[in-house]
Amino acid sequence: MAKKYTAHDRSMPAAFEESFHTPGMLPVSAIMVSVADAETGIPNILPAVGWGWLCRLPLLLGVSVCTEDLNADYYPRGSHPLLIKTGDFVLNIPTLDLTDQISKCGELSRHKDPRVDKFKEAHLTPGPGINITSPHILECPINYECKVSSVHSLGSHDLVIGEVVGCFTDGEVFALETNKGEDAIGMKCDDGSIVNVFWKTLPIRTVTDKS
Image (tube, rainbow, N blue to C red):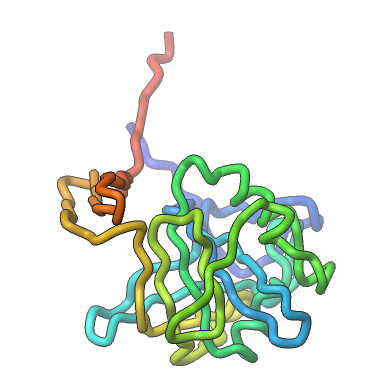
């Protein structure tokens, strides 16, 4: 099977509604970034797929945040100035049952409506921080408290690097398994119940016969 090659340059789509022609920014595990807003008192939520682990010691992660108005998919995020001003955030790990909430938070824009309350609109619950001012999302089973260590302008996006200073989990972690792209974490709750979170880190490819 011959490969299809698409040349990539820095040209813009011909129209605002069009997507970029190169299949870039492919989905990874979606996360939800929550950040405080001292001015309005209304914390914000940024769904994102442009993120990743960067360093183990110190434990650093990075989140890519759009700062430019490119097309219908890429536009300035209202969370960006909050991340800079607040200096901390929480990277929340959602699960499949929160798909609608992730979509709702993505449909709403803090950039367009500075007073929109995504927690309220998406029926999510903010939990107080321990070492930071930003709240975490109680419905997410894993929440990493982070302090902003640096911000790097890359072009259309800024890379916000956060150092993990604490982590909330639904219970005490007793198992963490990685096996050929199928990962799992087990947590024992105070009431004795067990919470297991499973995810896949490799895409699945299927081929349909021409006939």
